[in-house]
Length: 140
Image (cartoon, rainbow, N blue to C red; front, side, top):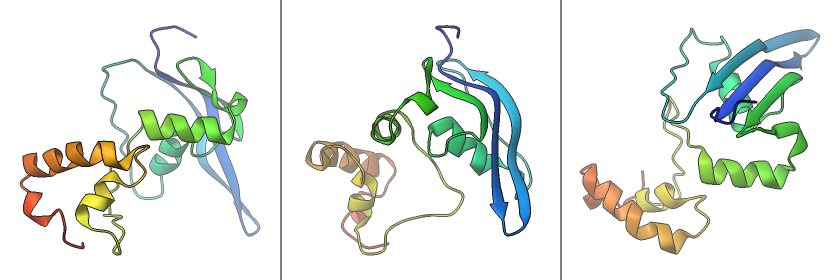
């Protein structure tokens, strides 16, 4: 593992069963992402983009191959360690809005933060930068 590599997949596959059918959501992907690099994952619906992101973030473990973050193989980390890493190091922007309707816009922004009170001020500032400060206390 090159120390300059942030995320690495080596022959990573994600295979699951859908009834009688075996689905190869990700099939032997190898890639390296270095700090400050921008990587786009594009493809038609059902091509495995989300599944690949789940592997790269540790949400799912590979059926075959390996995925590492800063040299640490996900299969060697506990669920709690992978959860902490995702919380601190990864973010997702989903195609469809996944806002929790019972939380305000501000609460949706800080949900999952390790210290909601500490993140609240930053979240308000971010909403202001996006022109959404007036909607912070509304429900989606």
